[in-house]
Length: 219
Image (cartoon, helix red, strand yellow):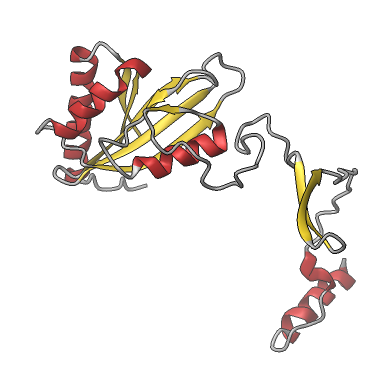
């Protein structure tokens, strides 16, 4: 089997990222891990040094990560520091990306980066809403996807699939009401039969239908 040709541009990019990873491990004591994973630079850093590291990434001429593309949470309930906050940054100047990961728990706040990248307010509010991660220094720490009266954080691994409350419209009271979930999770037996098996033959599909019927008769 012939080997795929190597992309020189991709090789140079990974070389630059590997050099950055080595520099971070050698010169930034708060970085506990830095490596190129599947062509992307991944860095893990201590929570208390997050802001100073991000200022370095944004302002240093060798890095110039001008844009925060995404901020999201990951939940590992079995860990003492159960949450990971993941930042994905883009350097338009140098055309490279970096993923920075910091750990925290339910009680310890992560420093907000909204003053470095204003768009972070939306991402931090989403992470707070869905995971319960609090960001210190964030002036607008409100829910953004769920209702203001919503209880719990729906993307935590220990949050029930049915939730804690259900919403319905009460005709007599003429208003939307909340009440405890009454959905019963009964045992269901799945036969794994295609839902299309019970449908009538669609126009233009007569030949395929005859083939299927023939296969059934012959079986």
